[in-house]
Image 1: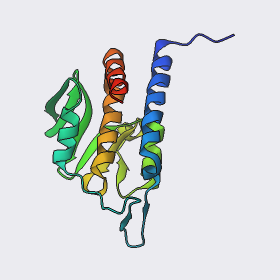
Image 2: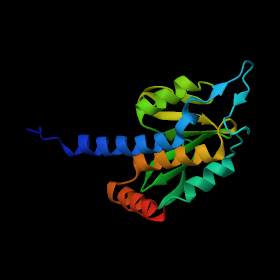
Image 3: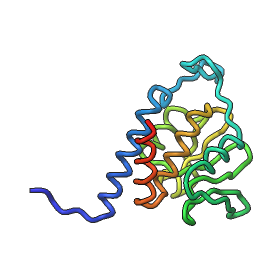
Image 4: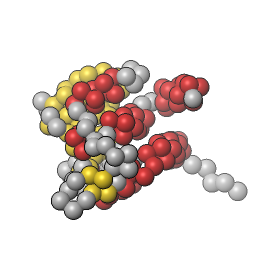
Length: 165
């Protein structure tokens, strides 16, 4: 017999599954290695070069995104909820699944940093833009948006993405 579950835990499971699908798309990039001295070893042979412009372009391409600010930092929101902010010009903060965020921080501590305090424990992660390839940055921003977007909007978006492929 299946135990009844509240809507929150079901939503969390759905979001975790969506995040897992996104993680699978990232493939071996999650565990990207660094050579001695800090040089990045990319499997594709090119160096990552993301900029604030990339982050803004990727974020604003997602449905219903609004630019805003808080604590003197620019941010991007979906229906009033922040999913990306710029704490400094060379980095962004994203909301990620806490387990996934922890794996990123562990695999690449020079590139991914937990946000200070409780926010970091909840999955908010700082990303050094210059250390992330634009394609990977787009996937991380999409993950963050998916975690924050309302359920119906998220479902419409995922259905549209599936229809395109």
